[in-house]
Length: 359
Image 1: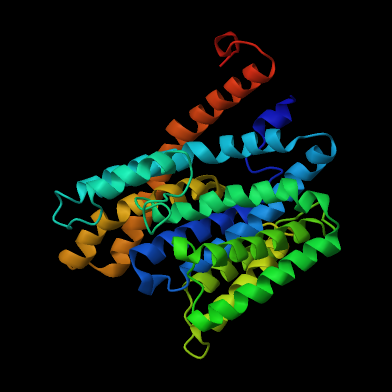
Image 2: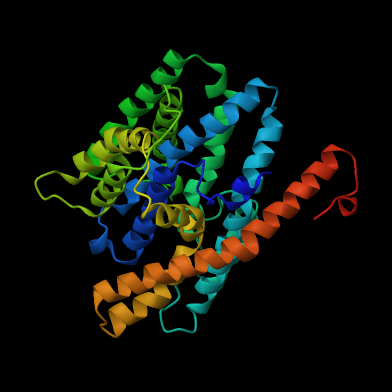
């Protein structure tokens, strides 16, 4: 490693605009759950997440798959990436749910429901005993479907031509869009009764991201107006609520057109140098924010709903708390646990006892 490499900023070589948009999307989902009026369409961030994931995974793993990476090895890498923060989120939200019994917020989650759902949820599987897939951390449904999409990438999408990928995306959209319009909204995912539609939603957006990854790429992405425009556009998409557009049509437009377009544009330009560290940091904590924000929702609603504190102020405090807790989880849970899991997996693959491997 050269001296120049050691002094390079951590965002060098990354898709910084996409990092920033991922961070904005995670904050929008959190704000939607905390106070729907401040991010009325925050849930369409999930469609952006799936499209972004398809793009990033295809760009990252397709060359490795062509070089001999097996499906099993790929899925192990995905589990190592997803599980530590998934586990942290589940533990923290479960503790928060239990605390509701003594905070005056009521019996939101019975001990029986928590006890029945935790064993499968700890395995990153939906609970077959409850109507909600992940009752104590409801947004975790999308993390399960992220794993499902990853498996579909290795088993199907990597193995079929681009025209077939396009057919998959269009077929999923053709089935998904009428349902969103009929329901007058696209907030679909956390319930067993929505499982079929959730599969369509995931397939449509994830495959769109894979298709975008196959488009010609720019070798050099200069800082400039395009990255800034993308960041402004995703904020606008997630917090706007235009009265002249029916809710269902707005959600369909965001999921089918705007989110994939933002992934493509975001991969072609970077924000200004002033915004780069902010965008990079938001991307670094985005997954953690998504994983843990549900735990802070009810405790901080007390100040807004019961004490009547200013909604805008409390929205900002809530998001700051989510970022702070998310950063702690990245620093003290995600990084060390992923490192340890990688050591264990490498040790097993070489038939070497884990203790013999360096930390």
